[in-house]
Length: 316
Image 1 (cartoon, rainbow, N blue to C red):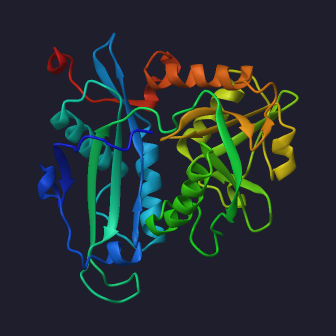
Image 2 (cartoon, helix red, strand yellow):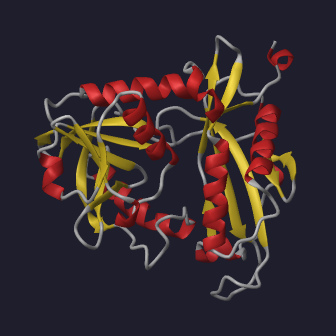
């Protein structure tokens, strides 16, 4: 993962696109002090043949952002379509001709010392940066099981991307990386597999694909839903949502991680056990290849998932 990203040139901040350096908040901002923010992550993919930048499923991402905001009593004056238009405008300002990642953030903007959610002003900001791989070893990730448990839905809503909840993810990820692993799988309070630090998980056993259900404290990932549809409708695989035990991962034929950041990554080793053959499996490879064709606009039936950024004459 590239930590040293170039700063954006612009950000959407307080209702308009401004130079990035002007998008600043006070150290007293409620969201900074208490984690009272929600965020999203979207990718846009550059298609060099068409000279077009395609935002992948922005309406779905922004609908989830608005749902996350509602869970935290954050009220935004935008629809998902409004936010899609704002993102496309921001990307045109940046002029990207490469794959990039966008981060929308809705937050409690009041400057006060008080732990609550109501009667506090809300704000929204958005920025985008060029972005490649999230996991360096995405063709063969080496993972462990984390000693940390996934945040329970009755503690912090698992269906929302709540900023404060990602302290849990940060603890998980740092311990994994410092222990020499690429990622970690996480169990919930009942001892079932939920996610990686910030990615959904699928396992394959005897040609059947399994993934934890939303009620297992997992984020309802946009890429997760995309892969389920692609595997069922295009690859004609049986996909079952159910609880997964830790030991099922040890005997799985394949394991893959997915998400906007991680995209689709193969897990080939858990601690000191190979997954299947110890190499990326055929199902993982097939769904990953199909996914990257879809996001680049090379699959006609899924073009409606993509929002083009540029008018034809603007990229010449």
